[in-house]
Amino acid sequence: MAVHRLLRRGISGESPLHPLRGLFLVSQELGRRPASSAVAGDAAADLRSAREDVKQLLKDKSCHPILVRLGWHDAGTYDKNISEWPKCGGANGSLRFEIELKHVANAGLVNALKLIQTIKDKYAGVTYADLFQLASATAIEEAGGPKIPMIYGRVDVSAPEQCPPEGRLPAAGPPSPAEHLREVFYRMGLNDKEIVALSGAHTLGRSRPERSGWGKPETKYTKNGPGAPGGQSWTSQWLKFDNSYFKDVKERRDEDLLVLPTDAVLFEDPAFKIYAEKYAGDQDIFFEDYAEAHAKLSNLGSKFDPPKGVSLD
Image: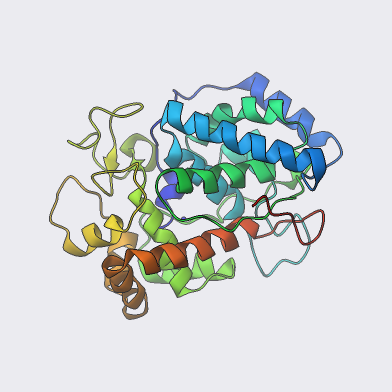
């Protein structure tokens, strides 16, 4: 969500694609029930318990990158120029529906839904919108990243007809990378600093050419997994969240590490470069800015009940 690789890549912990027809029917049926919100009491306790289950899932499956991507893709369809909910898109749980999972940018995310569906089934009072963002933030934290100041209480959309149109997520290799990133992320209400900070999450995960058209089939860093082997990562330790992405993109010394046009442009565009250089040199500043940007992204387009949301910490 540059940032779009968390929006399009294949990730460790994934199982082979399959229709998951039963899963879609379950998620659609749950979505057609009256929208629920994890707001207080037992519901808040469910969210805390769900967070512990996500932590265990991460330990078992090493699926941090795909869970980050799941949360980002649900939120990243937001359009600040549309005031009506849910037409504005954003973090509203719409990504559970088959029609949106079939968007090109969402290739492979059906596997993320499969991974967390058992958690959703266990905690009926937790909405998909909250669970997607809970899983994403928890994955960052458990990979060694900063604590994300999250709030919960998001309301789910109720039907696939409420899914956003395809085409709101970033492209992999646009002709003008800086212009494209700004067009997409300015539409969400994000600024240059937030674009660069969020790009730093590429320290996690891999790109799979069979899904995105980018990256090598495997490298010395990915040939043995964890999870399904293969793909090309941005960093050598691609399940560790730190500022190595910025260092590696700046140096470009290792042919086994991926650098996309939207990664390289962070050190080419004068405004982006200010932040990219800063983050390459100071992980603490990167963590501070990243946590703020991730929290902002996770709230885009969300309808909260109660309106101010609920903190678990």
